[in-house]
Image (cartoon, rainbow, N blue to C red; front, side, top):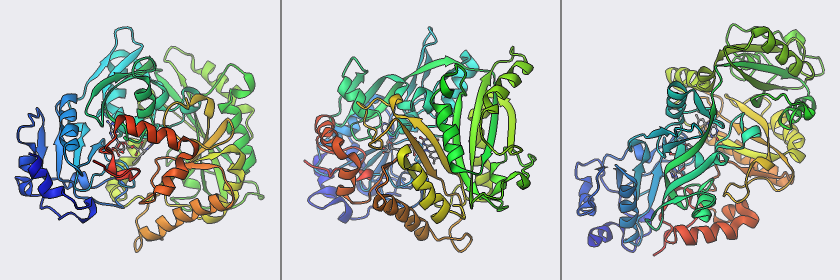
Length: 522
Ligand code: FAD
């Protein structure tokens, strides 16, 4: 078997290897690699899907796509790769990465979604065991409909896999309260880069547990996660409040995530975004509406407003047995103290499941118009509170004052909700930092305003200007092209720890080659 592998991957670097015709039924001669491997799952040589992702900015040609039947299959594939000098392995979730993070050019991709979805709620109701390739929307539906329970921390969009978001962090408007999804997991089953199938938790194989969460897929493949549950509410009141002044927006957002000035009442979800102060249908006032029918009366915008406005997005949970008047009263008490532009408030009432699936509607519309399948040059950053006003001045009010053709997310989170033993990297200073998500959803030129290259350049300009101005920030869902120095700077004083973890759990650098942090070694 090794001889066959060598045929494809001997001394050559991966990039210079011959392109294989992987469309052929026998994989253009790759099939013998898998002889004797005794996989319970299947191997597919039509690898076109495995060479793409949501970003559509990069492509690759894997040798084969493995659809594992079990964790043992995953281990077999990693061990197979470990016996060659160059083969790499990438777990693929729902391929919603932007920059090829889940790709393995001339390597093996493991399609985690094809593993049987297991979603098993513990009889105590305290947690659910979920397979790594399960989609969060499947977890939601099963937990709520069968048990009236739900995980505590979500992403905005739930067409992502459990293993994919846990490898990054997984953030949304609940993170200020419960931390990211990585803080709401108590146990994992992981197949390491050594091919070991291990259960880990804060008390068992703890170094592996902390490494894998936020570990960018570098240390192991998550085959099962134990996720904390709580009773699911029936209903959600969803509110948007518009601000003209950045300082009012941040003061209120920070007040709400920090516990509302010590009051016991708190929103269940706090997010926000910036948008353009114009009637532009995509970037402007209509983007602050919850539904097309909601009025947005621009006469309420003060004359002092600049080119960009801000919107605080809040949600309050309640149950069917709560009296509507009591919910209204509670809400008025909480919203009444906020400094939004009076008259620029919209709200909606919907079921908890509808609320959590809110982005699904946007997905359907984007698919119908074609922008779901267009390239997505997205940029996500964590920016320290100390520099968020400067970021607003140089990025939102200047570079992006005409918008990006999609949401410009902006909301605060609390460092104390993130356990620094995990692998996620945050800005250096302060308790509060902001997520900035530039989610471009427009056609590239000639249909749209910018070409894909211009969108990428604009992202680079934003990163460069942040560096030049000394803004304390980190990339979320990071990527640094071929730059090892970029990664060293990203990890900063955590770089040594990250390297040591790699040396322990994936010493040959087999896993997640698409990030280009480490080179495969033998
Ligand atoms: P993939 O893109 O398939 O993989 C991502 C990385 O994880 C790769 O390195 C891969 O090798 C690794 N990986 C995948 N599965 C496993 C596994 N089982 N074990 C170990 N490693 C694995 N993020 C947020 O935090 N909040 C959001 O609200 C949010 N919304 C999004 C909305 C959209 C429309 C999109 C496209 C992305 C969004 N993201 C969000 C980003 C998303 O969390 C990441 O892109 C995530 O990696 C995607 O998950 P995936 O299952 O598609 O993973």
